[in-house]
Image (cartoon, rainbow over all chains, first blue to last red; front, side, top):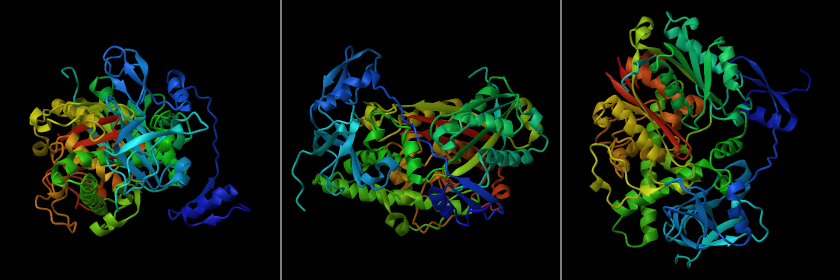
Length: 177
Length: 450
């Protein structure tokens, strides 16, 4: 096996495979296992379909929720049919201020968001709305955030047509240290 | 339930769960677990297995569509009935119930349930991405899709509902009260991490056995506040199988079959944000008054878990799980969700989960954890070490619980582990619990010594 390096630690095998495309793992179990790089990239052509007005709304600085035409259940994260009664919903603009219903600060994450760590996630509740909205909470650190904190929406100036076109920031002064 | 046949687990096998098994692909891993199970029932010939239910969670991890067909092929089970089962984190539990259905219905007498996952094929952060694709990819994933983050959101609200509003109700300053409640929860979650890692010291199949101390459990790296590394399960390679048989044939193959006494399954919204705020579906020993101001399930509890337990207890005729179950193997992907699950499945009331741990109920009686536990061992939970210490090769996990429960109920832990420390004396009945997504689907299965 000319040119293929052998390693006793699998961590080293992974490094070599990422660099050179192949490596041999000298397994304590007694085998020599060939490990190769196998890339996998996909571009999906994804339609937002019935959720489209929400994403177009973000570009206009609006948070579009939905409300059931029949039972008037109100959704902060929109859906075109009601989960309570199955009827059609209609679009309904949400207030741009809400409160933190729950929150966390992430210090690790998925590959795509690793470079953004640490970041805060918050489930936001709105007056008169039955469900919540998941968003990033910026401009506050772990020690500042609490359940019930007032927050307001901020929109991305050049929309990417992703739900991350909106995030929230504190809408109240920082607590005294 | 009247026309169902009785279904027994007659044998099981597990590979050691490990960070990576580069010497075995998924087919060979399942084959090893299968051979182990077959060796334990020498009178059963492979030709007598009439069907299989094969589970793995992720096509992304496998990067091989129809991988279940390749398992069927490798085990030499063609041309018999087979299908893949996928149900997120509850894939394994759901596969056992799918096997149960085919035997209970009378279609087959012997069915193999086999599951695997190969998560070592990508780096951990890529694996987190694959797992986060099991959240709404329009509304949840792009915000920073990360399951530990989702579970942190859920436990933060659980802490708020049950510690801030109760134990720390006297503190006027809202921020201070929440901080104090979270610190208390971190201490109790660390106790769960200690329990599961220490239990696993005696389980040779586990990935991360460790004589963990409270100081270590509380001090390690924060991943998503307030969940730190020891309170989170890891990615693994592994496989597990159980063999199911009807009452007509089970006793031909073993004198110690274990009855599947009752099954249950529940579901909930995919998005956390959509969880309703309604009323608690009550067990017979709970009263509506217990939960007057509680909005349920919110993001703090798992309605799917409660629903699964209600159905399973009803089918198994259980009216007092804490008195009638000898152990529980539950889906502790996080130490937080272990505590939340105690309440869902009725080991205690909603809000009592932290105290349940603090009092020592879910620990093992004869094991030293370096903790003062006044009611140690009244309701052992995750004697195997659970997902936190065994690892979580998703498609195998729920089946692994079935294997460990089988051995507990047969009294054969010593034989299979080479160490009988974890054997619960005279165990008659156990519950296995498999859980997916942010609680979007959960199975509960009651197993009973025949």
